Image (cartoon, rainbow, N blue to C red; front, side):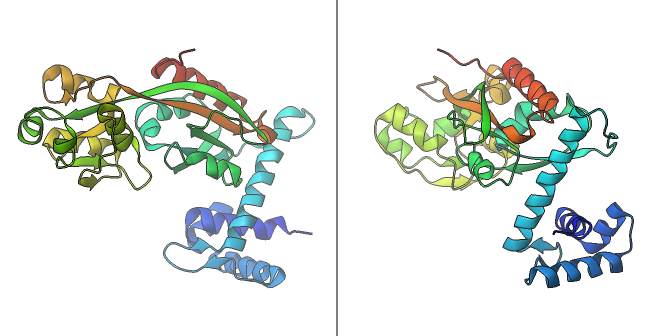
Length: 296
């Protein structure tokens, strides 16, 4: 039988990154946290926490943390659905995977439209965020995958529309005769990280061939816009984040200027569906108000 007092100490250490902060969260001493982790490791028979700054869970420790978080969510869901149980006034922590551009544009307003929750966000590319849900590491994800993951409900959110943009000075220097296979192979572009394929996809659509331009690696949505304004390179920016700059002439859309639409879906674990009803409502309402609508 698992000892949930010990598991709670482990989860607190991993979540806060230190024994001291975990002790503050659980209102005990640091030595008590240390003793609980030691006892749990002895019972499980393996190391669960790599001590450091911050403390990190081993693979076994991560599995136990995942278990205790799921149990906590299920208990919170039961308390909400069964009036005979005393309500837990502590906020529930929801671990959610979301892509960086959604976080930078519409997801924070969705978070603000809910109450009684704390959010632990995992940022990953929309083509990969569903993997966190498949592994059980999160309870919900904003993803480009429209096929429901096993055990999950899936809802269409809308399109994030991207425009290939650059500064006028950049275009004059690197693309004076327009975008061709030859100029695209020399003109620096902006890439978010190794998972980001938007620039390559847009070039393939625009030119009909695969081109590998030199790239700046900038893992920040705001830095993408700033770098384009500074003339460092061209990149696929969310249309709503650059429309004012385009109107003011600080940025231009590269030809062909049609947007590249990326579909987004909200997938959430069915087992904690009642607990997430308010979050689902906020996410769907906010996304459908701020994203381009899905076209049939």
